[in-house]
Image 1 (cartoon, rainbow, N blue to C red):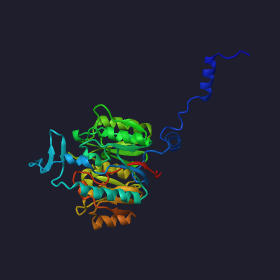
Image 2 (spheres, rainbow, N blue to C red):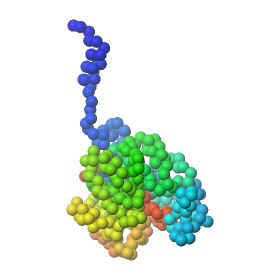
Image 3 (cartoon, rainbow, N blue to C red):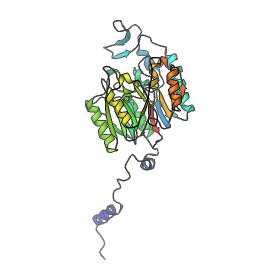
Image 4 (cartoon, helix red, strand yellow):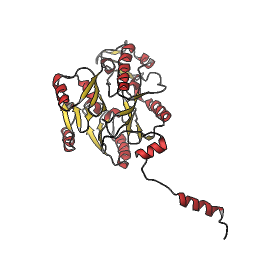
Length: 335
């Protein structure tokens, strides 16, 4: 028998061991074997495993109370590119106390809190970790931030995710703009994105390409003028149950939710509007800021939803609440 040439040995070996595209990248068994963790989320209500946060720090020093924009009532500097979008600037200590309380509440719910690494100078909006990345099945999407003051946060979150060993499935490029606060899961096969001043069609197309490969449909919801994120208007709080402020959502979207079997609880004028920017830590268990009305609480009770209240009014003063301040990296599936 003739001895095979080296090339024949090589080819025969490759043929024997072949390629194995199945199971797909984002399946739990593949992720656990290859990445050591079932990374990502396919819903917004399952038990959170890991969450990304950033404790307010020295980056807030750029905020200058002398830079008040009189005609608006807020603060900012167009040349330096920063803004503070309310008429009151709390102390750093006040924000830290509230942020720490939120982190402690999450830990008490069995969540591992992970902090962003190496925040760049002046990136004080980094406290709103929901925006610079968001989790889908198998890993993260790194956003491309819209306002100048937030551009560059992408590098910080990329470094953090890489050090964790979390797969990055897409970084939004080109002229695309998207922020994670305008993305939500409705169920494991349907997600929604709010299109508006911070999210454009270029980014939506890039996101849809990744989701479609996973068998996930992406619904596009047009937001009102100057409304930046969909999480200012709705929050999934249990399987097939959402808390919403209908003023920011189209009738078409509400009808589509009904067609999917998603029930809705509408907040009232007596509610603190920030309650829709809470966070489901597990099905039917939600962290919320103070200010829930008796009527809405009664409706939540009827649906068996438990609420955990934490004060968050100081952090909210720059336009982001509890949901904005948390980026779940892993959640248990609920299907």
